[in-house]
Length: 171
Image 1 (cartoon, rainbow, N blue to C red):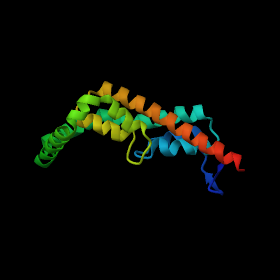
Image 2: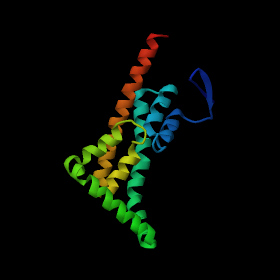
Image 3: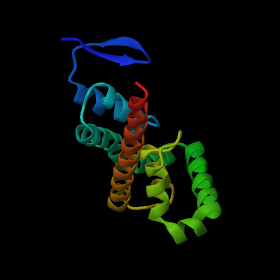
Image 4: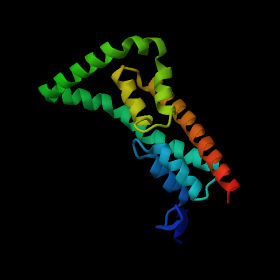
C-alpha cells in the first residue's frame, strides 16, 4: 500500500515503507534530524510518543557512530598527512584557546543546549563535534548527546502540537 499524506494542500505519495521507519531514517539526516522527522511523523499520522521514540533513536544513531569514529579518523589522518596534522593542531589550539574558559565554566550544559535548541546548524552531530573538539570522553559525550536529543524532541513536539492545535481552531 502507498501511504498518502497532505503537505501544503498537496497529496504526496510515498513508496511502501512503514511510517515509523520513515521517521527513523529522516531523523538520521544531519542538521535536519528531529526538526524534519517530528513534523513528518505527525503528518504521517503517528502519535507523539511513537514519533518521539523513532525520531530520537534516528538522531542518536549517526551521532553515536560519529562520536566513535571521529577520534580514530582524525588520528589516522594526522599520522598519514602533514596537512591534516597541522590542520587539527591549529583547530584544537584555536578552539580551546578561544572557548575553553566558557567550556570549563558551563561544560556539558553548553553541549546539551547546542543539541536541544532546534535551530539551523544545531543538532546531535554538531554537539558531537563540539564534544570531540574539547576532548570530552565518549561516554560522557554520548550521555550529553542523549539528553540533548530528548530535550530537543520534547521541545519540537510541544511546539508543533501547539501550532497544529491553533491551526485546528481556524479550520
